[in-house]
Image (cartoon, rainbow, N blue to C red):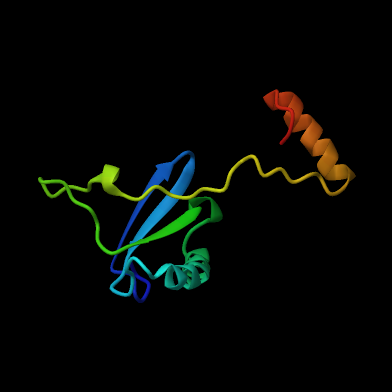
Length: 113
């Protein structure tokens, strides 16, 4: 909320990803392009103040924070994030990556990592 143009922000974990919901007066139902351009701005600003593991995986623009009848955050009313599928396999690019993949495959009992 310290960034220009962001009035309120909510973060929550969804499927092991940190998701940020951002409220700004410039966001509306058709403003996905604005949100996408803000993505790099927000990411760069967060690099200065937060370690990488604390950065959200997804930024979702919302026009207002949904509230319950009691005035509390209505988490069920927040839009579902579109997370990148883990099925998008990227093959190892060199011998070191191949060796690391083999180790993690054995440790995790997976066919691919």
